[in-house]
Amino acid sequence: MKHTLTALVENKPGVLAHIIGVISGRGYNIETLCVGPTQDNSCSKITMVVLGDDHVLDQVTQQVTKQIDVLQVTDVTRQRHISRELILVELATDKIGRAPVIELATLFSAQIVTVQASSLTLQMTGDEMQVADFLRTLRDFDVIDIARSGVIAVTRGNNDE
Image 1 (cartoon, rainbow, N blue to C red):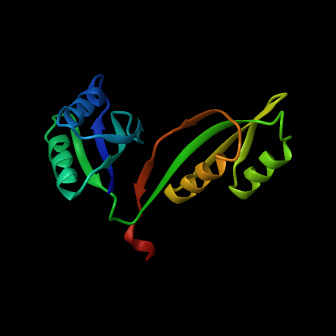
Image 2: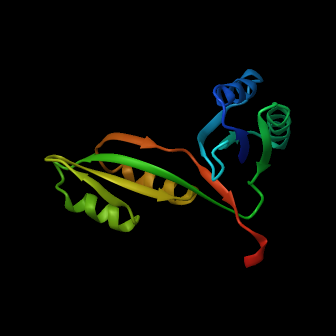
């Protein structure tokens, strides 16, 4: 099972490397990892997707929480949350033309971000299912390059239920 964890950490050099070392050093795999500043410049937010059962999740959460520069760890998997991933993909158009790529962009609410002589680059943002569907559709195209941001997530407040 995939677990999405967020960690609020002090924004200091080496904190991310230390947390990754703690997790990987115990044999757990991080599927995706994103980190960025928060509204408070002294803190960063790390979003990790970790594969494993509830025992793995408990171990990862405990180990990360123990770290001195970690302020808070939250498992958002079973909470109300919003998660997104960004994908940039360059698709060849020299054999098929641009129309099928433009149609793909329309179907997935993707944006065309660059136009080259023989390719188009799309930007697509979505949740886990939308990204999976988009990636399956890409099998029908000649993918030149692809980059994925990894998952970012925020919990949703209980006020809008």
